[in-house]
Every structure is written in structure tokens, then in C-alpha cells.
Length: 450
Image (cartoon, rainbow, N blue to C red; front, side, top):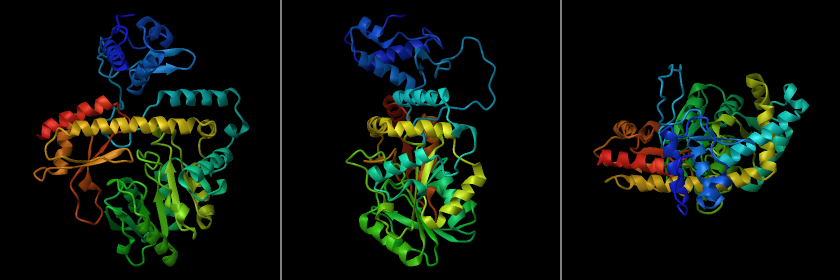
């Protein structure tokens, strides 16, 4: 084992030295790292410091943990050039730039637990894994999700009204095809979540924008004859505002009076850094006009492909039939592991860790961007992204190219407009990247725009 930092050095020094040794090839791909206890004893430091360094390496792709075997250098390590040129792979996936939206955090403890839970169900697989199950999803997971939503989000639901989906996008598609017809008019926040807009437009619906201000979308701007409205009231995408109580009540009144549907996408509600998450709007509705959507993609990882929809009774039969026709039933093995993760308390613990990681990443990104003159950064108290205002001399579409060259992934706010005049700004994510990586990329971008 190469020489490592002297005794008493803190975790960042150990992490940086291990990373340097891996990048230099001194610790080759696939090699096993010393057990954390042995390394802590050797360096005269705490085992927690060593474990923290290992977890950071795992989160950044430099190492992998193998249950029962230990921690190993990853087979493919970032920033390391192979000694012999390798054959190029077709369509090899590229790591997204720091700041890219939609990247989940790799939590080593949760991934280890998930492997253990999957192995548990593979060791003694139940009969549900060997035939096509309920298109709504397994009863155990639906019960666990319903209990979680009642306790954490104030949602009015039972297991029977839960439909397990592959994520929010499938939930929107199922709802659109169940509740609306081509040509129906839907109101959508302006600016908006582009994937939601694509789902509505792709199903032949007419779109009208509801301008968003500091209180969220305003239903007072409602278009006569609209059949539904799509909102992200807990944390509006992309502006990050929370819909005020008076706006929520007015929206529920609109749905009750017109017979319209409210599609509530509870976007990023789990990531609130100041106080507990706000209650969902669905729990305030006593007329059954709110369709509630959520996902595990951002709180766990997109590769899980599991989300949920709380469907009102009038739509439930149609939604289940469409779910059955489109992809039969959710993946039972992943469902079983996720159910255990929730029921055994691991999911709640994961959320606590994830919030701390997200807040640290947010602060690092803000610190890096603060070096830029004329960049107005709104520091969010919730969510996994922020919005930065640009100097008047710089268009956001131009700034996207500058950021990319600096190694920072951003989106142009103007591209998310629906019908209102587009606003200028950058939407930057801070989930899924180590704080120092975000900070360095943001500093390079800040220097590039002056």
C-alpha cells in the first residue's frame, strides 16, 4: 500500500490522496482497498473518517463497495487514461457535467442496503416474481407508499388508490390518456417543466400558460373551457417558488366549480432545508379533483424506475387498464426491495443523509458562482436546483455554451417558457455531484463570464 497522509489528518486529505493514487494508477482498477478498521489503525485516525473517505470515492465513481468482500477501486475510473489504448465502445455513456439537472446522489449506505435486500429476495424468491402481477403494483409496496404519503405529505390515500409507475413521466401520460381527449385545453405553469409540456403536447392537447410569480401559478388567469391544470406547488420547476395557501385554495375551488382536474406533481418536496416538507395540496382537496404524482428517481436513483400516482376513484379503472396494456406490471423484485427499505426505516434515514448532502452541494455551488460579477443567484431553501440571473449583456442561450466549455452543465430558463415572454436566466442542478466538483466548475464559469 502506498504512503498515505500522516496521522491526525482529516478526511478530505485522506480522500484526496486516495483519489490521487487511483488517478495515477498506483492503485490500479479492480484492486482492493484496505479494510477501514485496518487503515484507521494504521493512520491513527477514526474509522468514521476512513469510511467517509471511502463513501466519497464511491459516490464519485472511483471505488465500489461489494457486500461481504470490501471496497475496491472501480474497474473504470474517471480521469485515468489506460496504459494501452482500448477499443472504442459504441454509444458509451458519458458522465454528465456538474450542474446537470436530474442526476441523483449515489449514497453508499443505501446502495449497500439495496443490494442486501435484493439478495434477500433472490435467495428465497416468492411466487409473485414468476408471473405477471397487479398492474397497479404489489400490495405491499402500495401499502408502504400510502402510509409514507399520509405521514410525510398529508396525502389522503389508501393502498387501493395507489398506482406504481416507472416515474412521474409515465404518471402524467397515464393521467392524460385517462382524463382528457385530444384537443382538450390544459393550463401549465409558465415557465414550466419541459418534459411535462412534451407529454401534454404529444397527446394532442392544447396548452395555455399560467404565469408564475412569488406566490406560484395564479388560477385567476384561467382560460375558459380548460379541462385540467398541471402544477408543481411544493417547489415550482424551474423557478423554485412555493405556491401560497390562497393560491392553492383558489385552484381547488376552480376544480370543484368547473369539474376540471388538478395534476399535482410533488416535485422535490422531500428536499426542504428549512423546516419540515410542506403538506401536499391533494390533502386539502375534499372533492377528489387532485391527481397526485411522485417518484423515487430523485430521492434514490433514476435506474430504479419506480414512482407512484394517487388516482381519484372516477379515473382508477381506466388508469389501471392503460397501465396493464402499456407494460403489464411494475418490476416485482425492485418493488420488494423498496418495500423493505421503506418499512425497515432505511428510506427515512436515507432522506436525512440526502438532505445534508444536497445542502452541502448547494452551498458549494453558490460559493463558486459568487465570484461572478452581475450573476444574481437565488439560494433555494428547497429542491435540487437553483436559478441564476445573468447580466443584461449576456443571453442565457449564449451563457449555456460558455458554461459547457467551463465544465458546468446548465439549462436556459428562456427555453422553458410556454406562452409568456421568456425570462432570462440559468437553471443549475446541485444533486449527484461532490461539493468541491460543483464549486470548481462554478468558479471556472464565473471566471469565464467575468
